[in-house]
Image 1 (cartoon, rainbow, N blue to C red):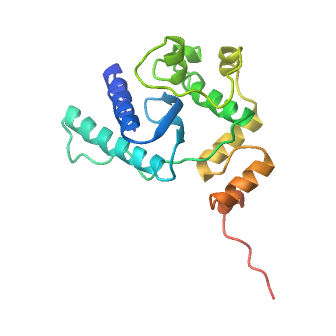
Image 2: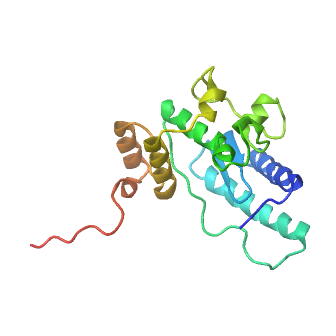
Image 3: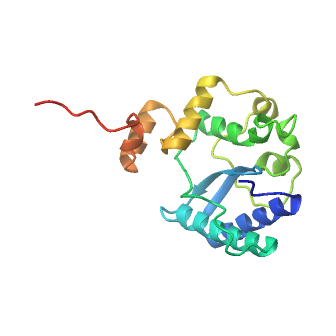
Amino acid sequence: MRLFHKPEDYLAFERVLGEGLQRYPVELLTYCVMPNHWHLVVRPSTDEALGRWLGWVGVTHVRRHHEHYHCRGGGHLYQGRFKSFPVSSDEHFLTLCRYVEANARRAKLVARAEQWQWSGLWQRLHRAATLPLAKWPVTRPTDWLQRVNRSLPGQALAQLRECVQRGRPLGDPTWVQATAARLDLAFTLRGPGRPKIRNQ
């Protein structure tokens, strides 16, 4: 379902994100708001911060959306809980940010990623102050624009999509195993479906 119909809709959502960032201990590293979904790369300071922030953002955005479009009681904008996964602070982080910031180009909404206004990439290039973007944990490469505008290799794209769908940590194998154990995410490392029953 389309969430954003005009520039004012995107701006209103960015305002909600910004208000939420003032209320909860979460840092926004980059983002991309698309017509029917959005991606956020964030660093919460506490275990509860992410869920509370996104819960507040969702409820506030839905309420204001219904009020603006005079459709109170018109049903849900969002179905189900948000999807999230941890990522290591290395080249995997850069791959994730590249994926997020290239979203509009990949969807053919713009010819080049930096032309999409509703993203962290556009914000940084135009030094916009719509949303407070935090410093990245790794140095952004000098050829970042070129990287974002190049298609990700198929394997990297498939790995990212699997992390999104399953909540699986993104990083090198040792980091993934340790993070999954620490955050009780071991189930995300198993294949889909029920475990096989063994005959005794």
